[in-house]
Image 1 (cartoon, helix red, strand yellow):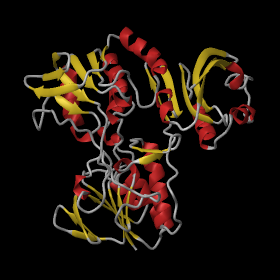
Image 2 (tube, helix red, strand yellow):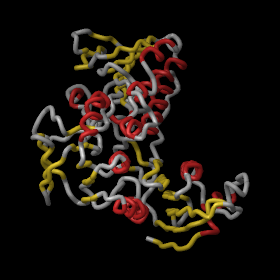
Image 3 (cartoon, helix red, strand yellow):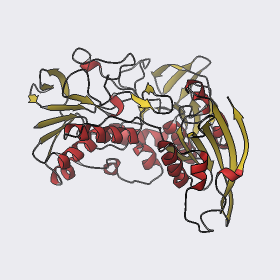
Length: 432
């Protein structure tokens, strides 16, 4: 069996590694159009904060290491340009036949209203090939605009402020981090932004970017000049290459069935190339997260190796630290409750981190009014909350009720936990 995988990021690499183990007789080819594989999307943040010091560290795995530790044939600087019968057409004219094909081409930023094809003062921070020249320009910049107040944009605004830059942050929605958090859970971060001098422009869609002796940014409400504009807007897949050979959804993602097979037999798609089921509402949606890429790679690898597996979908767990606050979210948010089939009850609560640490953890829990099952959670603290986020993620996946969550046996040490359960600390609730 010959398996071809297009895309050398998280989804494609994980699929290749899993199939290498599951199908020892298969020939596996991994195609990547860049000259390196395994790029870490948050690499620019890691460079700015000196958590990595070398551009080489912005890739979590190399072609050489992958080939050395497996039977995978890694073909870099090769781009797929078409699909004819059971052959992938490469940009050098080569035809690569396959028995099974996995499309894992990921997503990228696009800003169609950028006037110049190659701008000197406008950069994407989600692409690694421009980091060297970007660092040089950033060193000379004083006033910087960041477009997009999602995870990357908020993180970047904090990094730039720490470097002494004057930062304006633009977001087309009415709040930051809107995909994962409700507004009340972002208030502490917004307050810290204001204290640090960041200008936050919400409900402002950037309409024009121009590169003329610096960067010119025009939104619906203002026109401003900057030394540098950094694009941190949301990524989208570009699947136009496959439009004539496999079915696409209205949003440009590739249509797949429950097993992540496309409209063409023996052709699968995973990661950012597709929509997945958001389990709390059973809606199909685009979810650009590494954990989603890894899960879908596992599903397809099982199916191709002879164990047909349906994709269960995602509860969308995310977590990060911004401006001194650890933030986590999983499952349904309050703003999404109108898409949920049942009635929803919200519980707000706070409790101490431990018996020896008076720092608070603030939680928002959403539960099904009829079944009492946990369907969503958000949490924040100045102490790490990620172990609790993992527990809540498991609780939601396993459809635990509040009683089951409260009764679950956990270890106790006074430095790390209080003896109270989560539920005993609830402060307020509502029904909708």
